[in-house]
Image (cartoon, rainbow, N blue to C red; front, side, top):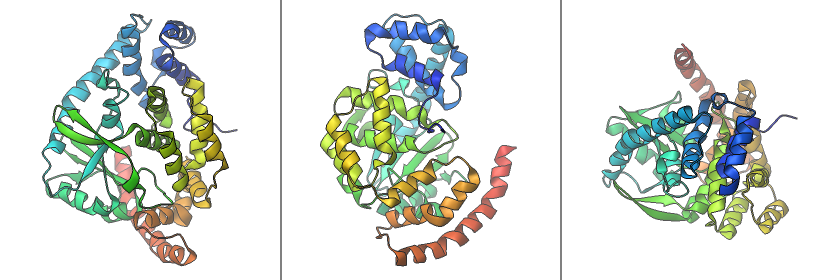
Length: 363
């Protein structure tokens, strides 16, 4: 059976277990891993684990066999987070009233929560900001008017209607503008109830997602297939659970209300392998709840790695589900016919326009 893309392979599983082990078990877990693997085997996006591993070993005065490599990865992350992220946050701190209300999520938000002991152990390449879906066009126009360009291959119009986020860049400043936690939600207004908190950073006071909301987003964001290994979600989610600040009633209600049980139930059970145990009642309530067809279809699309199958899903249902979520529409046959009349021509147009750009990037 095909392994879900959000599950770690054997080498990554071992590294994660070292990162998450109780203090008195870290050294034995590290030596066991070293007896089977070299740190060089951890490649791609999974090097994100290494700075946290270095800090964990350093705090416990454990010297790894590949100490110099691990140390080098840590200080590379330290430099990037200190220099580049400082510029990103400085830009956000000086936004005027023309930019809508926003909250930080993903990397920078997690740096102030479960990675607060050493925020640079949670690498991130940009700053993710979350705005209300109704404000997404206003936020995009604000950035474009100040010299930012839209990254990626889709047009702005298509992105605003059929995606949940967009990356904007200006020199070394990189902002990932988000207006949704997941591609589909049974309740289009779910962000109104998402819990937030405030953090004090060097650049000012920012709103961030609560640990409960961050856990939901971390699992959902890691659920889909990605060219960069999506298993990066595991360390974030496990640390959030281990911290012990999750409002499990809010968590369960939000998941059920928005039909996000698939594959989140399996993800939560999988985290027990790393010592992050979810209350039994939470799993029981999620398993007993009704799972919608729309929620199942969206995950079916997101887990696909084959390009042609992803395109077929987009043409048949995923773009429709994203569109009705963004526009607060009820899912119905009438709305399906209405939206699908827009989907196929837009997909063909975007494919023709973006194909030369994709080929250029390959070269």
